[in-house]
Each structure stands twice: as C-alpha cells, then as structure tokens.
Amino acid sequence: MKIPHPIQYQGSKRNLATVILKYFPKKIERVVEPFAGTGAISIACASAGISKKYWLNDYNKPLSQLLEMIVNKADELSDFYEELWNQQHSDSIAHYYKVREEFNKTNNPKLFLYLLSRCVKGSVRYNNEGYFNQSPDKRRKGARPHNMRKNIYGVSFLLKNKVIISSLDYKEMIPNVKTTDLVYMDPPYQGVCRDKDNRYYSSIDHCEFVIFLSELNTKKVPYLISYDGKCGNKKYGNYLPDNLRLKRIELEAGRSSQATLLGKKDITFESLYLSESLLKLINIKPENYKKQHHEQLMFFEEKSAYA
Picture 1 (cartoon, rainbow, N blue to C red):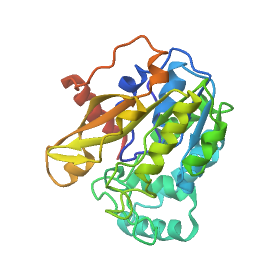
Picture 2 (picture 1 turned 180 degrees about the vertical axis):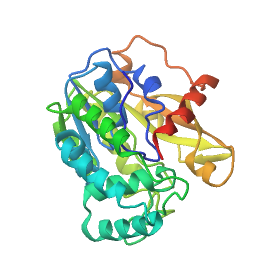
Picture 3 (picture 1 turned 30 degrees about the horizontal axis):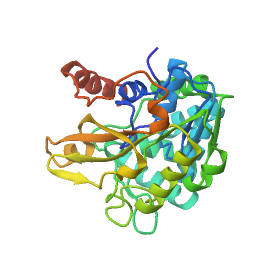
C-alpha cells in the first residue's frame, strides 16, 4: 500500500519514515506525537500496523484542525478543496492571495489545505504578527482534486476511530503519557523559529525541552527525537546533553527545500535520538543512514501528483 499524504509540508518526515520506523518496537499500544505537523510518522505506523492508537498534537491550531478534518470529515474537506481548486484557473495567483487573506482573517483549516498544497515547496512561513505569508508556487497549481481526495480518504481510513488530535503546549502532555506509549518528537530546529526567520508557527525553549525529556526519562516512557541537524557547512542547534543518556545517529534527508529554493545543492543530515527506555525494547543496532540513488529517484517521481 502506498502511504497517503494529503499535505505538503516543509520538514515533514514522510521521506524518512521507513528509516525512523526501523527503531520502533514491532507493536506499540499508542504512538504519541507532541509536534505532529502532518502526522507523517503516525500515518506510516498505521499503514504498517504497528499500533491501533495515536495521539497527534500540534500547537499550530489550524494545522491540528486540518488533521481532524482529514480523519473525520474526509468528504466535506475533499469537496471543499475541489471547489476551491477549480476556482483558480482564470487568475491562479490572484486567487491564491485572496484565499491567503481570508485564511489570515478566519484561520479556516479548509483554506489552509489549499495554501499548503499551492505554496512554494510546501514551505510554511509566518510574519511577526503570526500571519501566514508564504507566496504561491507559480509553476504549479497544487495537488489535483482527484489525488487530494485519494490521499485524504487514505489517511481517514488509516486513522479514523484510532486517534486523538489536540493543540496543546507539548509540556501539558506529560501527565497523560505512559510507559506503554512510544513518543516520537519532531520539534522545530533550534535557530529557525519565529524570532529568527519565521519558518515555524511557534518556537520551543531548549532548556524547557531538556526538562521535558528528563521527565519522560523519570517516567520511563520510550521516545525518539528528530532534533538538530546540519545542511552543508551550517549546523542547526546544539546536541542534546549527555545526561539524558540518549543514543544519537545521523540520517541523510537529501536536498533541503530551503537549499533548493536558493539554487544550492546542500545535503541535509538530521539527528535522531533514541531514549534508553526505547533501546531496551528494540533488537536493532542504531546506525547512521545514507540515502541510496533509487530513493532519490522515488522522491522526485512522487511530485507528479501535483499540477
């Protein structure tokens, strides 16, 4: 089964999901994502039958509401997207800006889906006032309605009646996670949050995040984190401290969207941290990962679903 993904989103782990899932136990009572984004890891888990329960949380409320609609209102969302997509053909650029203006007034998640599908490289940007301000990709018009509907239905099939979706500060989740959960975290890279270049809706404080991880350790909750990384000669953030007793490996993520936008060929490497509690549950030696040539080809071929 091809794994469905309705949302283009910079930073999504859809292309690394197979590698990351290697470090998941064979069966998990519940997968928890405090920084869910598009939910790519949970969708991949559901496709692989790893768990029957999920908790997707993202502080970006329109995004979490969009995930809720994808799962529980697939028909309504698909119909709305098709109608909105068909309205753009007389002047698609003006149409995009009109939809963007309306979204910034209303935070309507149905409008957000069209903007994410149509914006440059799925590269989400917000201005200092918190308004979505990314430009349209002038070379394409977003996912065709038929393909979007197929992907929405696919995610709904995988997650409906299995998932809780919320929009909490991640620290509020601590009382409700347990040792039978597996927590996967993909927080914003250090140094690329709203106060820097507006790449993410909300930043996280490094020290607060380390305390959060310490609390997970105390509760013996198994977890993985995609956290810091490097692109070319540029490093994003500091490594997590040794006292957390984490195993760190590097995963090659390919050319970054940002490098592509700037006409560069820099390769992104992302750190994946595995907790001590997780390492006791899995029977695999953590190793650095480098993409193979055929995987790069598959990544580019997938873009044909977009007009």
